[in-house]
Length: 360
Image (cartoon, rainbow, N blue to C red; front, top):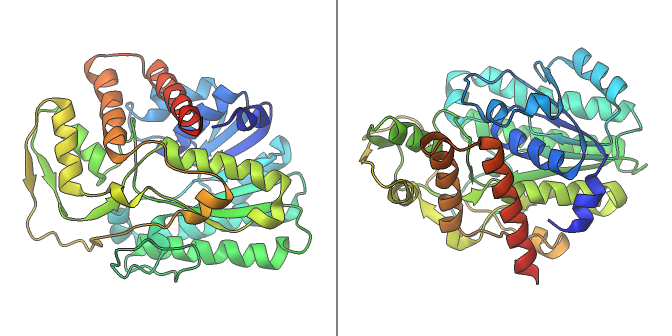
């Protein structure tokens, strides 16, 4: 993160949907550190260990707990707060949940996005909108090369399909209502498999591993040979922040889709990531669930050339460093009983410093 980005966000009015989620909590804390005026909305976290609570965000930013599908409540926040920049992260983010409740998944991921865009269409104080979707929005053909932003959208499971639908919706609004006047910059962003401290989501590799390790139980892997572009949580968030600024000043050239993934060398199997976590933790056992009934792709990779060339964004941490930093956060907070706020502050500062050094 450059000093220009840090200075840009100071005192800016930022609305974050999904602020109570994993990525939303990290983004809220980072913007708070920059001096932004943050308003966060989201659902109530489901347990006391949730990152939103651990970071004490309700005392740092304005928060409002409600469902993003409630457009009337959302409208009141727009009118009263008048956000300049919006980061739309609110979603049903779990593939397994989409199998159990597909209608809810489509409703949240489509209608929640539609509500944001519809309100932006009616108020001229919004300057930048960054809509977070997923790398799973692409029609996955199990190819080794990364998907580019103009590749075919698709999805064989409800979650992936809901994200593809959201992408189509974003483009439709952008082309229909925002392209000619260019008063609002609207971009969609697609990140890979994000890892970092404080994620307690169900059916996600790192949280599942950590829960088992804390309880001294065996780690069970559902799809050990699946390969994913693992990346540290601050990597895509830095991209979102850079894009939010670009859209503010140059809506015409940056209102499009963007990939924020990792280098191809970070394509490592679920089994290897779990083994790296156990090694860093110091102990633990891993076993494989045979005959998993839930469909998952074996490989998924993003092409990040566009972001590297046009945003000058590139990953800072390799996959090994990402796993180490992530595991350290959980060990520091839950084993060594260190303050989660200070632990997170430290990791953000170290990441920013490493990014600065990499460009020197």
